[in-house]
Image (cartoon, rainbow, N blue to C red):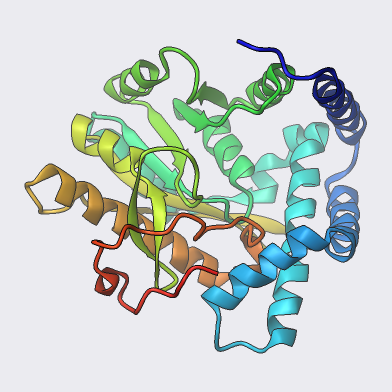
Length: 317
């Protein structure tokens, strides 16, 4: 494999040093301080990161065309503030170690959803999105003693990937890096062992995908969750960790396998059902999603009926 140019390698190394240094410093912050600092930094990022701000506003215009420019601007600013606060809350590792259960509430009715799914004995495909604080979701479930692993995407720098893996492992979160050798076997092994396998499916990434409705428009959505569940018979649970006052609240729902007997139709139906739950969670608190992500970047082929989205598909912009 050809090595990247020296300047790129140097930038990656400096980025790694910066992130590693920040994690070492931020781990000592109290949660309230981390949250306040994150909100401030997020506000600055919204003001200074013009390119990301434009992406967020463009996404919000597609999702909420009925809202005014001022309303979408306020939503985008709040999204930047929330995302930065959530990141710093996760980074305040020592405070999290001591106060995770009080920070993230898990009502009994939602815990019973997960336990009932696990009791079926075929593992659980746990689906979520970049909603609220997905890192705390994984930590809360792992801390409670449920055997679980999460599928994650490697960074462009192996040192940074190792840093992230170690940071998550210290919080009890085990990772399966999707691009590494043996990742598919590890996913199947986890489910066949009766474990929880977490996966986020709300982004347009370079993985096998199907087009399903998302805010009234077809969006390329990873199909891995549906494929794994249908192949293994694993139960499917969708869940979120969304901000609730000064803390977070977990919500969970089991999603039944579709009645369709043809495999592709079943994958399509299950992926659409999961995407619908993610959209509903975003609508509950739209400031808690990553609007700077270009969710509708990949356009469907011409032979996909626009009616599948429940509304005419908007032209690419």
